[in-house]
Image (cartoon, rainbow, N blue to C red; front, top):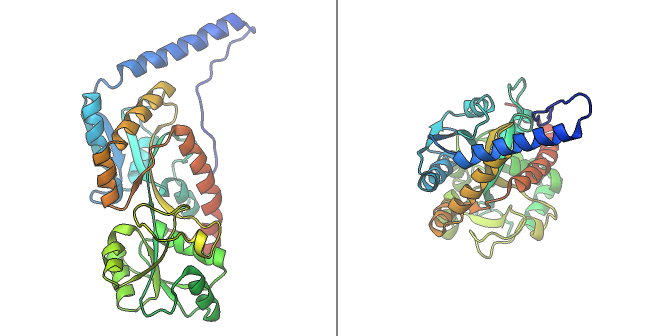
Length: 328
């Protein structure tokens, strides 16, 4: 993760403190005036392909911002190239990025990226998070995380787990579990969540990590057994289900995250305005409920909280990805 955030610097020769102070005040005033008139034209939220979780979140937030701003907020689906589009956009608050944690994990899995997640973006808000659920086939003689770890250690290399997209949160959740538990569970590749679940239901594999939406009805119908949730705290999405950390693997945590960013050097006053307005949108009861139905929980953080979380995620997942040899 090379590079650091860059900022505009005014160099004043001669050590004139009064002049320095005046220039700083002018810059601050200019940013404030810009924020007060913002937005005066349509805003664009760039995100990944249409139909996915990022697209759903972007459209829900865009709808709320359109109402609050009185300006159209549009969603622009660009796939993976959305990151590069926003990194190169003007830092004026009119081009935003909504993306998952893949933004800061991709540099560990790909070489020669044209952007850096820290250097090229200004953090706006940690919008939502979604835990994964550790589920097993009902025939597996494991009723808890401790049981599963003991079984995997007794049968090294014999248990399989299903995973779809390489480097996606369910895949990383499984690799973190393997690393922390010290077990050898073999990854079986499937094309997407649906195929992975079918492999688990039919007994081709014994376990998998999944977002709540697809597996909840299968858990309720006893076609799958839920062992634990991967968030640090129990999730309101699945009342009564213990965390992995509390049921056999202390310190374990793995969640899917969606956040919003602006290009680096976007004025701080505009970042603050964006954060304030998006928090208002996310905290609407009807918005929280729509996210809940898709298996996500609203976070609505400050920009500073997003920065702290990113640093923690980069430090934690970088080692897991390197140790597992995950490369795209």
